[in-house]
Length: 302
Ligand code: NDP
Ligand code: DGY
Image (cartoon, rainbow, N blue to C red; front, side, top):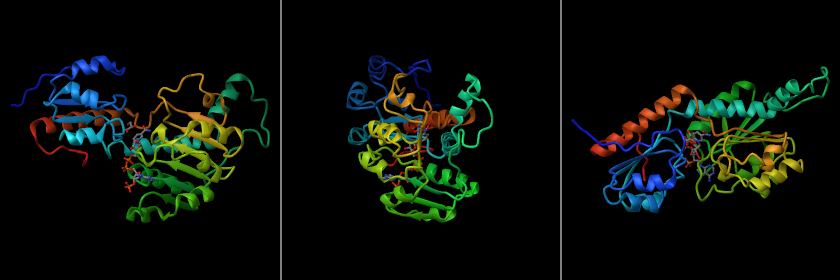
């Protein structure tokens, strides 16, 4: 029977850096969250015993992959099991943003609802629209699948190469510039990488329609938030819905939070009870497989 000693940070709050550096000393395996930055300092603190890192996330931009690779450490992560939950949340955020749900709820509570008025709280609908998905991966495709039945006319996507699976949603592979010019809704679902960091900047928003809605459920750093603020206040785009920001949490006095046309959620894409349970189990199983030298249920190819 395989036995291991567990050093546990027993809290839902992120482990303080100093505790992480101390706790990881001599460990053979490390289970972490996306809020833990696993860089050379942590790997050095762990020392040569460390053979496996298992993150409870599909995103791995918090891991210093080059350093990990150099040390021949294996990495486990949680693809697929959170795809449906994240796609659902993306659709919910898109609808909430486009149809101005937070504003409407606020008006009901504050007494701003005086009567039915022809143009009051009008927004944008999906029926007959063009949707552009940046990064048609697992989540991007699951979002597209869910949006099509709303009557979306064209589904455009951009990325590094065309995807055969796009056929399922009649997806058209187009250059990013065409996607931005033609889409009524732009959904970002690519991974954060040096290539995608700051991708959504002034030039990006300038190419979008003034009536378009921007949605990001990937990582905050894909967006230049100053440029997004400018675009939203100057009427360059109609609205934005963000599940991810820089930093997280976004300070409560951040200018984006003062805008009615910006809906910000606290990184809850995968937050259903069942998904988080499955993610936790997969993360533990990846770790155990890494420790015993077996095949992991979900190993990141480095
Ligand atoms: P996938 O790897 O399946 O999809 C990522 C997609 O991004 C791939 O299709 C990839 O294309 C594409 N991509 C990479 N580089 C670029 C680029 N330069 N321009 C456009 N597209 C690019 O991952 P998932 O769909 O499972 O997850 C995507 C991301 O969503 C995660 O990395 C994570 O950051 C985020 N996420 C957020 C959640 C939340 O709670 N808000 C929950 C879960 C995930 P290619 O295949 O060609 O590399
Ligand atoms: C991930 O898995 O990368 C998400 O951001 C949280 O589920």
